[in-house]
Length: 265
Image (cartoon, rainbow, N blue to C red; front, side, top):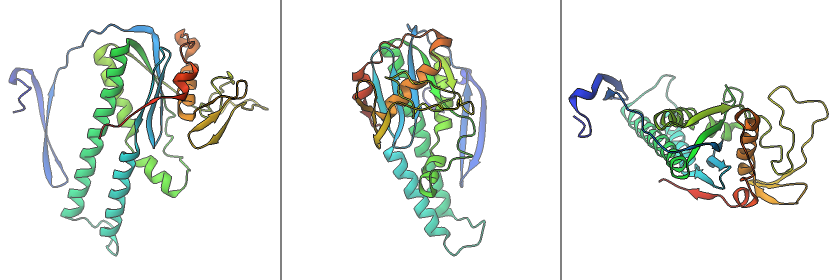
């Protein structure tokens, strides 16, 4: 038995076969944890590949959860699988492939749990009561970023991470809001560009700022150079600003320019 569980707490035990081994899943009730948060403080989250999660809040904080190692793990896994499958018929499987797949899946699960915990702990520490996650439904089905980037994007378990963050929000009494993120990367937060919803871009719409290079965004009015992903995360907050009654004055130049980078491996 796991040392942190009591027999009386367990409601169900699932025995699941997976990749030449068996998993025992213990299902038990989790009680809610009361935390002191402010519903006027919100954290906007923009997801990506190299920067797995870019988080910007209206309370003057910003950070990036690094995704480069996660991308490297997926690349190595795909390379090994392609090598082992070379010259083999469709449907070929072996104990070595099972071990590789199981190791990769465990590392993905570990990454999801650690990243979600980092986000939740940041909100609890800073009294943030709302998390706004930018997400376009079925976006991976129509991803067209080139063969190599598509493979990295599709295999990174961001949807599982989003669901894990939502579960932690439920446990700690934090509001979780999912919103579509169309045009958040193109529009300028500092210049207050209009943010149309997906499929409803008005004729003649244009952005004022522009991406100078990968990861760097240049605003029009003040000629500021800010982090491109932080600009996207701040625009995600703008998507729900009116609906939630948020004050975004705390999203200043320092927040958009110098986010802290967190690596958990």
